[in-house]
Each structure stands twice: as structure tokens, then as C-alpha cells.
Amino acid sequence: MKLKMTGHNTTKTSYVTAEELKKVSNGVSTKGYFDSDIDRNDSDDPIVLTIKNTIYINDKLTGQEKKDVEAHERQHFGDFKKLAEKMKTDIERALRNGKDPQIADRVDWLIYDRCQTSAAFHRKTAGYSVEICFAPTSDRPK
Image 1 (cartoon, rainbow, N blue to C red):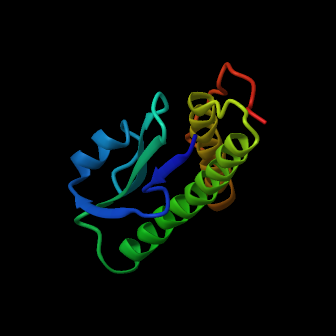
Image 2 (cartoon, rainbow, N blue to C red):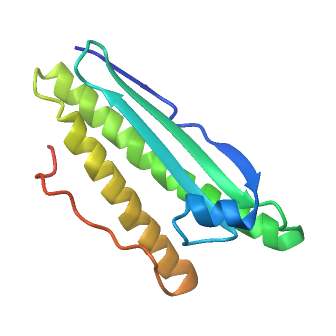
């Protein structure tokens, strides 16, 4: 089996209203938010993982505040990209070794790790975190 994973290393930026930001962030932010949609099909060969990353920025922000929010959200994307690259490498290794790639479990752990990384970043930069991260019920794939 082979893996075809796309989108994990790119993002687009959308400038939206504060109301739209509230919607996409589930009420967490009105300034900026990083989001990833992950679709998978692991029943065929190749296994297909398609990731769509989007940075949302409030379209009313200007000047330094806008630059700061953009930089903050790019940091979240950079953190996610590293985690996704590691997941890709781990899946490819499992496939090479003839093991079950455990795609669903790996995606669940990617989402959890992204939440944990985001929470750590917010504690470091803001002194607090709004994230509540729930660990997957599965064991972490090896």
C-alpha cells in the first residue's frame, strides 16, 4: 500500500468578519483562528489523506495588530505542519514495514497533539490557554 497525503504543508488565509470568525472558531476568537479539515480514505490503495488548512483573520484588523494576529496564526500553522509531517513519516514507515497504518487513530492523535501544542503556545505567549484537549480513546500508534 501507498500513502497519498496532500495539503498538510500549505494554508490559505481568509479575511472574514468577526461574526464569521466566531462561527469557525466555535466562539473562541473574533481576531484570528487556524483551522484544518482532514478527509481520509483508507479503504483503497493508495490511502488518501487530504488536509485543507485555513487561517482566518478579522478583516477589520489593521496595522501592528493585524501583523501580530497573522504571525500568531502562522505559528499555529507551522506547529501543525510539523506534527502532520511526523504523522506522514510514521504512516509511511508502518506501510513499508507491512504494519497496519492505523490511519483513523493517527488522525485522532494528530488532532489531539495539535490541541496540546496550541495550548502550550497560548500559555507561553498569553499566560493562559482556552483549549480543552481530549485524548483519543485509542492507544497512540507506534
